[in-house]
Length: 409
Ligand SMILES: *Cc1c(COP(=O)(O)O)cnc(C)c1O
Image 1: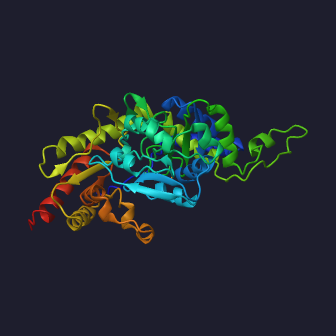
Image 2: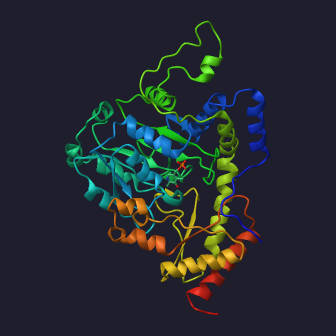
Image 3: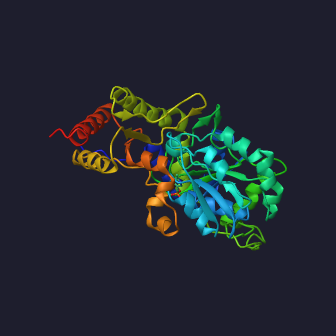
């Protein structure tokens, strides 16, 4: 039996929506993108959502919109996919890494300690689909002592008057914190619609704009949309609508070119329409079946799926093995792969990667991140998995554990 790690969810409705786009005669940014933005707003309650061509480009847009550059600091967890830090580096600013909690989310006490008068943004990451402690983060950025340290150096920094909370919600569309959905838990939230994410447009992302007064979110949506289109006042779709002077446009600032095509939006549109009712419940079914099996094993540490405040959207099933070394974990994964089952690790903490090592980050400063990583195995989790497949993944992991960690030959 071959079990892939994370195939995209492509059913007849997805195919129909894509074909419909192809036959409509309009394939780049237009009505399907608008429809997807409306669905994201409906799902999250965010005042405005803007589609872009990746999480990474969306993050660069927001950092630039906020005026981030050389000399600025952005606090991020050491345990995330590198894009979180790379977006900061692309803008010339410094990613300040802090350690995480046992549940993989950022340690807010460490965030507090890392704040300086150069801190402009905190970027928490909802690893595996479990929201960070947003109440604590909100209290932190509103704390009068922290506000007093803030040194605004751009128009939007001045207007906000405090550190911006920018949520890396690449994993967490559909998750909840205190009954509020991701999308309205931070000032700005960015989802990824990359091929392996819960909802996909092949490549893509969405920015949820939830800024406080005196910001006008609709106005910021319009400005950010210009940012996605080279700062050009009319997009191709508007120009295509005809009229005597419809060809005329202006370039009003130096933007990026990171708009999402309708052809991509069509995939996500068909998926998001059944996200609440089909896709997420199916992912939950998989997670619960894993839980049933692994909770009986003293050697397994179950991921947090739900607690008093939070509800995951089941993006990853991040199993950890107790009392195991990084090398034994790798050997277990090799054994499981021999059974035709693809498993993964999320993530290598960034200080283990060459770029970040060369920049001076040291894994010894992030002991919890390292321990989480060294004992972690991400199991396949997606709607298409059958109960029979889930059971064979469970026994493959168990066999691998007995062979490797207990040295049973
Ligand atoms: C996937 C991912 C990203 C990057 O998303 P792209 O859409 O591929 O740019 C960022 N952060 C995390 C945590 C991710 O898993």
